[in-house]
Amino acid sequence: MQPEKWRETVDPFSLPYHSFQPLEILGYPHAGNDVFHIRGLYRGEEVRAYVKAARQPGAAIASEAAILRQLSGPVFPLVIDEGDSDPPFSVTLAMPGERLSVLLGGNAGLASLAFLPEYGAALAKLHRLSLPVGNQADRRFFHPPAEELLAKSDLLYLKDFFAHPPTASQRCFCHGDFHYANLLWRDGHISAILDFELAGYGDRDFDIAWAMFLRPGQRFFKTEDERQAFLRGYAEHGEYDPDAVRFYTAQCYVYFLQFSGNDPEYCGYVRDWLKSL
Image (cartoon, rainbow, N blue to C red; front, side, top):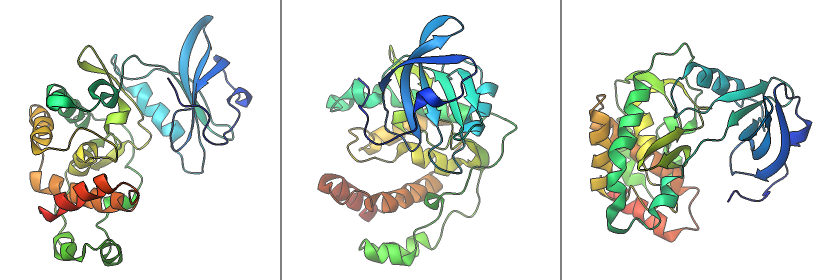
C-alpha cells in the first residue's frame, strides 16, 4: 500500500512526458520532492513507475537520472523518461521487493543479522565505482554540530569530542542516502537500490555512518552486533575507518535529536549511545 496524498503537489498528468503516459496515480510516497507511484503506458505496455518532480530549486533530478543511466545491473531502476521542464522530472520503472522495516517488523530475535552483511557489502561495492559525476552537494549533516546546538541539546560534554573530527577524508563515489528505506529486498537478497539524488563523490566513512545510524521508529541497527554485521559485510569489499564512522554516527545523532523531541524512546536511545562515547 502506498500513502494517500499527504500534501499539495504538482499535477503529474501535466508534465511534458516524451515516452511515458500516466494513467492512474497509485500512491504518494513520502519524500522531499513530489513523488508519485503511477500506473501508465511505456512503449505500448502497461507498467508501474515512479514519477519524481522537483519540489524546490536545487533538486538534483537530472543528476540522479544521469547516474542511473550509467549503472548497469538488475538492482538499479531503469529511467524511462525525464524532462528539464518547470519542474524538472524523471520517471523510473517500479522495482520488486520490500523494505527491511516491512520484512523484519519488530525484529524479533535480531532477524536483521541475516540481512546486514549483504547490506554492508552492497554499499562497499558502490564505493568502488568510478563514475564521471561531480561532488556531493554540501549538507549540514556533514559538519560537526556547533557549540550552540550542543548546549541546546544538553550535550555540551561532547564539545571536546566534536572539536577533533577525522583529519583525513577518504573520497569515493557515495550513494548519499543509503538508509534502509532506499533498499528493497526479495527472497533474502537486495532487489533494488533507490534514490541516487544525493549521490556524488564524498566522504566514504560518513556515507557508512549515514547508512547505519538508527532512525526514529526503526527496529534494527539498535545493537552493536547489528552494526558489526553490517561492517563485516562492508569489509569483504572495502576498507573503512572505524573511528571516523563512530564520529560521524555521533554527529548524525546530534542533528536527529532536533527532529525527534516527541519520541522519548528514540531520544533516550540516542542519549545513551552518545554517553557511551
